[in-house]
Structure formats: structure tokens, C-alpha cells
Image 1 (cartoon, rainbow over the protein chains, first blue to last red):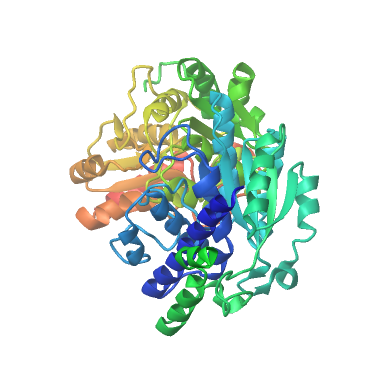
Image 2: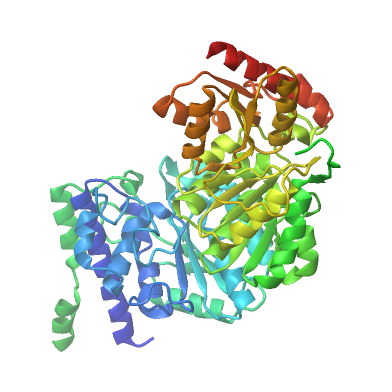
Length: 285
Length: 317
């Protein structure tokens, strides 16, 4: 990847993170931690890897993105708005009555949302259905399902994991946002899902372990998944919950609360550091 | 139904399997999912004919429903089948979010509903599934009364856009409709006209209600029998018209008296035309092992029980 391409993705991720903060501050509730941890993965998918057309959200050959960890809706909404699926003005009305951005994704109200999620564990099976349909129809679109690490405590995930391997869904990519925290505490203490890579491996998946904040690693993993035949791929992305905002990073309390005005301003200031214009100036010196 | 006609018996699940396999030729977008019960639900008939469009998901009903939603969102017409206990209770959250809230075009066709599952006992006798399905927004709920209606409902389901819960049974039951019958969602059908009491029944209890009407006739009571296969949307107009004429209603279902047909019908009556009513159904208990006929008799779902309920209603008028 060229430096310019990397800077482009970094700036997209920055925009997404800033929008997450302002959206949640405006809404007064919501989930910053798991939205921020997934921002780089989502930026790489929406602004580099996926074949999508915001003007045609129902285009039959589009790649599909399913946010199985539906509480991270802000990261999806920020990406969809930035990509042009709807007006960025809508972001101001997250979680507000009579507006389209629901607390958790709703496919009936929001363009670009592929399936309503929020009750954890359901997205992977829906992705299986989309991937099976592609096989039946001979279409080459791909299906990406972003799951939370706490979410894989749901039994349904493993039913679906078994089915994806059984039906050899090599057009399906699961991405696990492995930030290590769930509402009640560290996942290892609440209900330890380890060894995660071995589990998916033993279920018949191709597993790639990456740093979920490193664009080279994210894109290499997505490209590797493209090449794998006969089995689905699980990208185990190690991430930092609250990534990008120092006082939210690795803090379980920031799973599901909105920043105050002061906290929001502080977060925006941090997220603005090293912004591209600033960087241009540095490069020029 | 005349007494002279020879009564043909057929399970609604058999009619389903055969019709689905037939429709598979005309509709290439039909796909069928099952959860290791394809021999019992009869989806195997489709599976053998169209193996590449048939997905056995194993004993993983949640995965089955989610996958059906994904297939529906990709333009397929998925029929997902298992026993009624699993097709609702086991997958309720999946039905709620991935099917009903998402309004995906999934047809959940549940077999082995009610007491007439028989010997398998209470664990396998769904007596709550109509209630569970009915309370979900966007979900159409249909309980065919016989093999003929089952075929018509499946034909309808293929063309209908939206989630449907279709409730079928295990046991052989009388075929009471002729092949010219037309199913319309939201419409009930008067199978026997009467003026003294309205018996509103669904599923296999329609045939039992017709038997009850014959018993009542011998006692000088002229009962109207309505097949209310479309539980949601319900045929409010027909219920009110019949209740206005007869002044009393009996609901009959192979289901709990809580939340199913009786609740649906009595809600409409309470809001519009409160008339004396009685509910024939399972009275808030689980079933047990036994033959279907033994169970229907023990739990108060025989023609005799229906007739007695009709007489009680008439006394209260």
C-alpha cells in the first residue's frame, strides 16, 4: 500500500471516530468503546476493500457488510454517511424519535444496513444465507460479518460457524473485534472464550490473526481471505476498546455510555491531532 | 360436508411436502431449510428433487432461521421447517429480529403442532406457538384445516411478500374442503351456516367442530361453523357478522386458551360486540404421552366438548 493510500484510510478512520464521538455526545447515550475499536476495520472495508455503490444500496452484486455486534451502530452509521449512503446531517439525530438512525441497526429505516441486529449472535447465520445465495446464483459478491469478542459467547455463533464450514462458504469472512472487554468486565474473567483462534480453526475456518489497527495487516488479511478456497475465513483482529481516545482506551466503563460535553471536546481534540493538513505541513518542512 | 361422502384422511405435513416439491419446478427461487427433521416435516421430498436448493442445517434451529433470513434478503424464497415447538420457542429471538423486525421474506412452516403429536409427549406438543407467532409485528399466521387448504396456503406463501408462520400437524386428519377452495389471507370461511351459535375453529379442530355441529343439530341447535385459518390478519368482519347473527361464539383450537385463536377472536368481540363466548382449547397445562384421540378427549377438545361449550353459550345469551 502506498503512503498516500494509507493516509487516506487513516483520515477516513479519523473522520469515523470523530463522528462517533459527536454522534454519541449529541445522542446522550450509546456505545463508544466497541465502535471506536472497530473504526479501522470498518474504514478499510468501506473505503478500500468492499465493492459497494452508495447510490444503489440494493445492487445485487454488492459486497455485504453485516454488523453482528449491533451496539456498535455508530461506527456503521459514520461509515455509511461518509460513503454517501445518506446525508451526514442524519448523524445528529442518532437515537432520536422520528429519525432513521435507531439505537441498533435497522435495515428498514437506514440505507446500507443489510440486516437488523442488536440482539447478539444472529449476524453470522444471516451472512451464511447471503453467501449461500451467492453460490446458488453464481454471483461473486462477498459477505463480511463483524462480530464482537463477547458476542461469540452466544451459542448461535457456533451453530453458524459449523454451517459456514460445512457449506464451504469461502465467500464469507468473519471479522472478530477482539478488544477483550464486555459490559461486565474482561471477557477472560466473565466467560473466557479462549483459545479463540483454535476454536475457529477446529470448526473448519481459515484463521488470520492481525492487529486490528494496522491497515497493512487488515488489508493483507482481507486479500488473503479473497484467495482462500473451500472454507470461510475468520480474521481475529486484536483491537483496543475505545481506540483513539486516551481516557476511553481499555476502560470497560466506556462500553455503553456517552461522553459529556467536556469529555466530548477533549476526545475531539485528541482525535484531531496529526490531522492530514497538519501532516502536510510537517512533510513540507 | 355430507355424511354420505367417504372421508379421506391426510396429514397436513404430507400435503406440504408434496406441494413444495411440486412448486420447486415452477419457482426456481424456492429454497428449503430443515433442522434434521426433513423426513418428518416432509421437506425431504423437495430435498430429493432439488438437492442443491435444500439445506439441512443440522440440529441448529437458530442457525436455520438466520440463514433463511439471509437467503430471503438475497432474493430467495426460503421455507424453513421443523417441529412447532422448535420453530417458535427455540428460535424466538431469531424470529423476532432477523425475520419479523427485519421483515424478511421467510416462510416458517412448522409441523407437529398441538396435542396430536401424540406419544412423544409434552416436550414435543406445541400449545403456545400461535400465541408466540401472533404477537410478532409483520408476521402472518395461518393454520390450515386440512390437506387441501395446506396446498392452497403453500401456493399463496410463495407469492406473498413477507414473513409467515404456517402451522401444520403430524396426524392424518379428514380432508373437508374440496379442491376448488380458495385461500385468502385475512379471510375466514363459513363451512356450515347456522343461526344459534358461531363456532370459530382453526386447524384440525375445524373438522371436529363440524362433527360437533352435527351433534348439536340432533339436539335442535343450528350451529354456524367458521374455518378461521388466517389468524393474523384475522377476519374481523366475518367474526362480527356471524356473532351478530347468532349472539354467541365458541372458539376451538388445538392450542392453549391463552394467546391463540381464542384471544384473537375475543379481542375483536370485546372491542366491538361483546357476546357470550366460550373457549375450547388446552386450559393452561402441558400435554402428555398418549394417542392423538385419547389426548384430544382428555384435554377437552372432542366434538362432545365443543357441543357442550356451544350449549353453555346459548344458555348465557
